[in-house]
Length: 206
Image 1 (cartoon, helix red, strand yellow):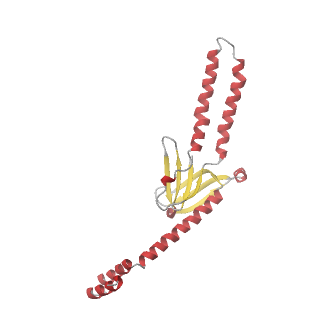
Image 2: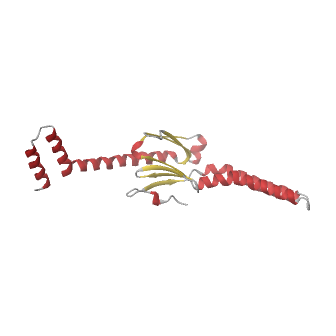
Image 3: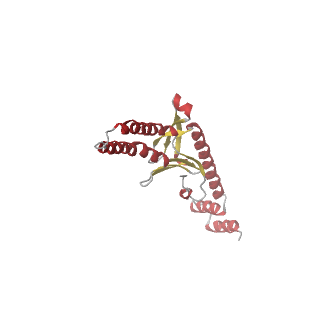
């Protein structure tokens, strides 16, 4: 299941789409193996005849354990995404009930990562993002290659700022921007209304 690109806005491009690191599945896999081993060891030894109740009880307990822990965590892993686009960071998870949060790149103040020795060996770690607005400080656990993700966020955050600056420069050098500056001069008395109209006609090519 890939991150749905229909959730991207017009002009936005997907840069990274990551599920949590596989290390989060070690516990669920270990529990699954233990349940299967328990069934193999216990079920053949149960008495025949009246032992059917114990057999069903053993199967039921094992299935309950699998549903409550391994299956639930696997589905959470399968439906969780940490996404970096050219405009924002998205963290999304859930199958039926979905949860999603977004942080615009321009709102990010700082990105750090933390890795223990074992996490560095397997390429996992925590990413800490500090941003302006309602989210403040967010910790994203079990991120794949967090140092590379940190660099990617910084890179595209800078590119996002450069695009915004170019857009502002283009807007300020447009005839409309020049007319607005002339209007400000007129309002402050630096230009007479007649001078304003003359300059405006020149800008508009009239």
